[in-house]
Image 1 (cartoon, rainbow, N blue to C red):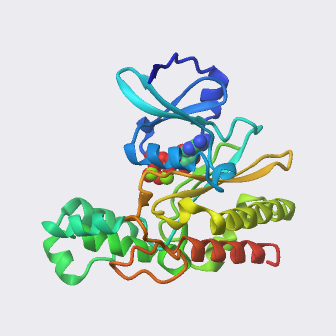
Image 2: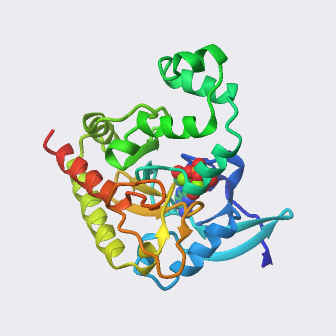
Length: 288
Ligand code: ATP
Ligand code: MG
Ligand code: MG
């Protein structure tokens, strides 16, 4: 662990884009790098990825650093090589919570008004008559309901947010569910430039290939991880695998398929199934 000198240039601060997570979770760092709030789990993933087939598709990892008494994971800023990037965060998998989180949420399932309000905000008809009466929704109920609103359950991925080079930012995709909706969003994201779709597709195909050979992927429940899509006006288009905060190692000797349905207890995440759907969806963008 080293003390990190904090010297972000003004320009990088203005360009930095964060599409998910708490705002305080990231800090700018030395040229071309960023700091993400430390998590033991994510650190272990980065350590294990050091000699894995997925290494070319994850941000460079430069260890743990300390800043203002807090620990951070030091990693490559994926936006650094772009000029006014367009960025999309696509969260993979058929669920975005761990099985153990569901179990924990069930321990004291008291109706919560904050979750009730969050549900009504997305869909006033979300709560059952009883939930309306008590103005409360339990955590496990909320967690499972939320995944049915977006394309998480139906397609195995969902769009979390988009920031375009003109500065516009959208994170209101909680109800973007159908393949048609997703096609629209991608179409708008690339501004009708199908060369970008072609580049994205070839990168996704490489990622799929790497996932199929990755030892890390076989032995982890990959939850809440995203594919980060980035392109700019030069035609440069890349996709990266990010966010291992909830990616959890399976017990020794156990493996996942990643493309069979989740049933509570089997820990399947639907990652590969989602990627397959994502590829098919992108293939139909250019035919639209
Ligand atoms: P959550 O769990 O809510 O998704 P988080 O705190 O785990 O959030 P991430 O998902 O890792 O954070 O990152 C949040 C956002 O920050 C991403 O959507 C992306 O826009 C940006 N980001 C993360 N890592 C990088 C990186 N290495 N380079 C460039 N941008 C990044
Ligand atoms: Mg994330
Ligand atoms: Mg996360």
